[in-house]
Image (cartoon, rainbow, N blue to C red; front, side):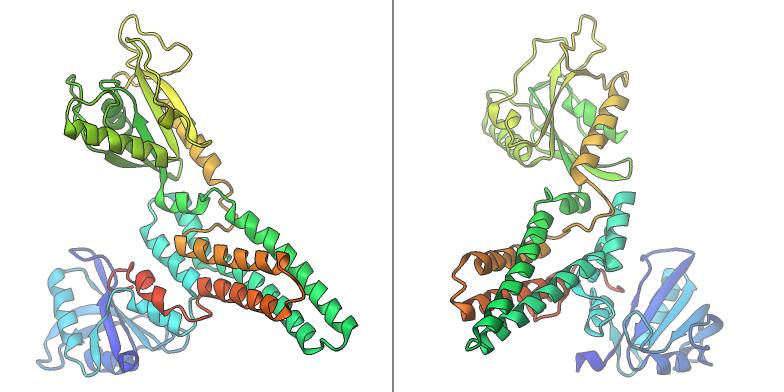
Length: 442
């Protein structure tokens, strides 16, 4: 069986480095260290050992070796870590030697984390937090991912699940003792009280403006405006590099160009888009269509207007965005005779107004993301399961109480939906998607 095999992989980044970490997990891990780097170190204490190829007895490297005995390990299995010199040749030789050991094979992407899940070391929400922590680029992303990996979301959802199980037990009691009217009625009403409280809590949790997903993926800012309004220059100024081509020729930008920024610890994705005007050809028409599509999906649109020209009003489908943020900027304020006309004035050439703009964007992002300490939904999978749960609770509250068997089924659906988030019920269809996000060695 695949689970009986011992897996190994390079867990540190590939390439040349000071240290390279190779991990081994499975029933043969102890035998591997006994053969390659005897004697086996004391559990959880690092020891300097010579790593040898058992076939040729050739010394491959001198390394720190750590032995971790099951079940108190990351995967719940016996584990070994080899802290090698970070030479590609050393890593290649060690991996090749491990691959020749009986019962050992190279790990698949995410297989270490999957074994941790299978052995009860992590639930699915914590696994997603671990993946997000690996991908985190900003301080706020790190904070959210670490909290989720340590069980902030899992504790919240498991608490709700326990309350639902209590309500479900009360409904089942009402069904079992239907001939005793006082018992049945009291049990069902108590269940309704629990469900009403949970319904309100889950509804409020879902009505969060997608703040967790925004923090994980990035606060999206779209630069829009007529051609030659300074969008590409502003993108380059914010990125502090030549990310976009700047030209006096109108229509230079045809496709969307994105840069990722770290503003006060928050991830911000700024997109430069094609200038909006009456298109002169099919390519420019497609560029404008993409601009409008990005503007509709953005968390913030910055509409740039050349301060040396008469202001151009944004199209209605850009300025009217269902309550999402929209700011107008007067660009090229350094040109003699330029007028801001009450707008935030900026110059990408001189830097005038850019600190104020950055502060304003960071403030809007912080406002949209909200309290970093409150557990937040971070993945569409979690949101979908919570929506299924909420609909089932709504059915329980609003549909006839006399149909008690059907109301019991409503609660079973709700419990199952919550259980899918942490992996307490069958989730085989989502395991591949979740663990496939990891690289080999994690």
